[in-house]
Amino acid sequence: MSGTTTSEVKFSELEKKIKRENWRRIWFRFKKSKLSVIGLSMILILLFMAVFAEYIAPYPSHAGLYIAFKNAYKPPSLEHILGTDMYGRDVFSRIIFGFRYAFMMIGLVLSIVVPTGVILGLIAGYYRGTFIETVIVRLSDIFISLPPLVLALSIASILEPNIFNSMLAVSLMWWPWYVKLTYSMTVSLRNEPFILAAESQGASTLHILFRELLPNELGTILTKVTLDAGWVILIGAAISFVGLGAQPPTPDLGTMVSEYSKYLPEYWWMSLGPAAGIVLIILAFNLLGDGIRDVFAGE
Amino acid sequence: MLLEINDLHVYYKSYWYILKVLNGVWLRVDKGERVGIIGESGSGKTTLLKSILKILPQNGIIPRGEIRYDGKNILKLGDNELTKIRRKEIGIIFQDPMAALNPVFTIREQLYDIIKHKMMIEGHNPSSRELHEQAVKILNDVRLPDPERVLESYPFQLSGGMRQRVMIAMALISAEKLLLADEPTTNLDVTIQDQILKLIHKLVIEKNLSTILVSHALGMVYQMTDRVFVLYAGDIMEEAGTNELFNHPKHPYTQLLISSTPRLSSVGVGEGIKGKIPDYRNPPPGCRFAPRCPYVMDKCINMKPGKIQVNKDHVVSCHLYD
Image (cartoon, rainbow over all chains, first blue to last red; front, side, top):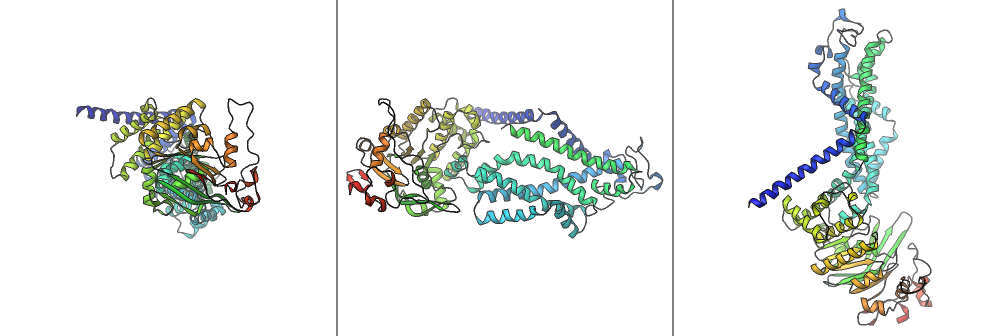
């Protein structure tokens, strides 16, 4: 009796050891490039700032409606690192809250777009040559044939201008790209002998889609997700910039750039801060994306 | 009779034309019998094996024919029964061991999946320890050294011979009655080929499996089978006991095929067969071998020969024996 228990313990230890080794290998490949480590730490820092904005921002109340005209138009100083805006609000505090909206945007948009696009792409690729493929692929073609920014702007302009509707608009223009990506990979993997082998062993369609095909495509999809994160921010900022996204006084980075750009060039610090914030996030995600690509390229 | 195929037609549809690949193939495999299929590349051997498991590509259609396995027509079976047969009764070893394993999973994960689903068909949900024991046992069966290490490896970390052994292990899990081997040694070097063949031979005898062995290597077919079917351009040309077929081939194609095998004892290389496999878009209406046959007659061009029983256990499809 005791013999079986020890072998069971050994067995589970072995499994744990393998998992640990796998993570170690991933980290080893990732850290080979210093830039991707920098990107990851930048994202972690920004994320930390976004989550604990109330505690980190020097003037948390300045994020929303707050007016103190006697402090307005102050250039950067020790008291206000990035100066103050036309209502006397601290720009730096507002940027930190801006990160929160930026991450919300990324999270929400990608969690709608990626699963939808990937699942539709897998199905279309697997049922190649059938009616299902035609419907899915042609529908995404229609969306892709419109210029993305124009599509997002027109959807946003139909809806009431607020931050959630702008996320919806970005999602609607984004999913076809994931369909296309997954579809093209599925079509080429579909006829690989190992898929045939799985079929000959009696594997179900679900098993083939999610256990055989998807894991082979995951590296490319994840890389695209991280690289896209920056683009989501950019498009979101563009929608906000033309006034169809988040409305003032929401401290959205794009909205802030648009609001403050009226005061250029005399009060340059106002729009420079949020613009630098946008650049920072996009840069961080692009660096991270390169690192993730390196991890998967090794296999 | 375990497997009986009658008048099987398989076509591949493409946008512009239809490729008429199999043209009324027949085949029979008794319980415990080892059957060989020989024929040159492109004559439809792999298509025949794939249609037995119904894993033809999406553009493959079966307009006519029946495949009776254990009394049931596989072509008319429901999905559930078909899955059961695929998971438990018929296993297939593929041609290319380099590509037939999923590159992103370890051997352990792939073996576990197969064992688990087979056991679930039997109404038993195995624990991870049972799975481990089964996996190690099956790898020992195919004489893989150090199964524990093999289990943790990804396919690219194994050599060709080892991968082929893993493939055989996987096929054996789901082959309780019939094993299909599709040129199992094509991509391996000669010494490994020999080992793999001996292994398959031994396992087949140990487990009393029926086998269909598809191969170009005539010597291997001669050693390992009881009966041989000669397939050319989607038609069965000749069927006979292995000894009978190799010593007294009746069909001109079989004679030429056997004589074109290079031998160490002879000087130079054999003559070969002139011409090539016909265009499947527009195959010859009569005997498909007619355009290449040295004994071609007028009726060969337009009339497909029937099955002619030349003696007990020897059937040939040729107008020469009418």
